[in-house]
Length: 488
Ligand SMILES: Nc1ncnc2c1ncn2[C@@H]1O[C@H](COP(=O)(O)OP(=O)(O)OP(=O)(O)O)[C@@H](O)[C@H]1O
Image (cartoon, rainbow, N blue to C red; front, side):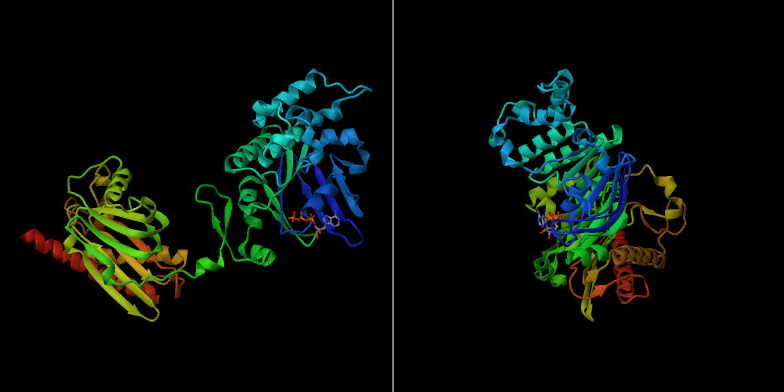
């Protein structure tokens, strides 16, 4: 659809866009990203003929740009115009109708029925119907932006060139406008070439991205190919984290502000634990990064209040997360700061291990009851059971864990728990085979993310070997306490 063949151009003598070569396919949503002053707007001006090409060619639908007359080009390519003060005396309807000029012929250019129909349609699409008789001067920046987009859409172009279309738009209008454009590209095969400063939005909406720096292409490709941490950090000269979006496959960028790296420090120590028959509570001054199977706050998160709440063996609740949220409200522990698990174990019997050396401290807490011990190989015999968890394992670490270390830490901790079950000779009462845990055990790793870098947590790493040993001992002790209590 658009072939950009080795183009060079700019304003005075030195080129701003320098030998740029790429292609955009019909119906593609194509994003242009790059730092301030890298040449994005200049590139758009070369694509729509506002600036002359010094070298190279722009081919649109197999014809060079020069082939198209002004009106013919306006029916092919629309550009979201920059905000122009000169429009301010017109009202919304008149401004949008200006987009139809390329379809009007004759000496007196009166809009025909089709022009009116298209104008009404785009006013509706862009949510401007209620404002159509307001002068532009009375609109907010975001509302004006929508009017200019409506004007560009009224041109009924095959190609839409946009320079930061979501500038001035609030969150909901950004989404609404981009969803609308995406829909047009998918259903009407509208080709969209758009500049974005927000890399996350570009990554969410664009089929491909062009990353430009100092007038030259650094990379063209799918968002996951372009959004590479080293590449972005070298071009933007900033610390950037690239992560998968939790819901979609598009990568997500996080800026890492310097001030955030210098946080107040939590000392991981036994004194943080408050245990009663009702709950075990650990409160830390700083938010800890967690990875857990907790009923409230599961998955990755950041929390400072940690609760292991006692429930009766017969406890059954359809909405356990909501149940725990309400409990936290009663205790005046904010939901957004609190991670919570439940257990049927007798909480004062919890076991604890603590280690501090070599720039790292670890605190392990385990609660255990064996009412529903199970051999994982025969779990299918119990799938319908919804009993509360009995072995809850918490690992607090003062260190900086990679995501791999969180996951390996969970594996190491689980293996250690199973080994404790084996040593204690715990059997699955249904199958009389060795139990590997209980039917609804839960686990959490919480880390300060400061201090020593801990890349891995497998059994032969320093971290993993300590976690394995301490969890084994704490679980064994908690099991023994449980068995002792059962005798009485
Ligand atoms: N009208 C102009 N006359 C001369 N130089 C210009 C003109 N417009 C832009 N430039 C220069 O061209 C370079 C690239 O500008 P351009 O607007 O294309 O960058 P951009 O990537 O769109 O930047 P931004 O992200 O800040 O909008 C800049 O150094 C700028 O100073």
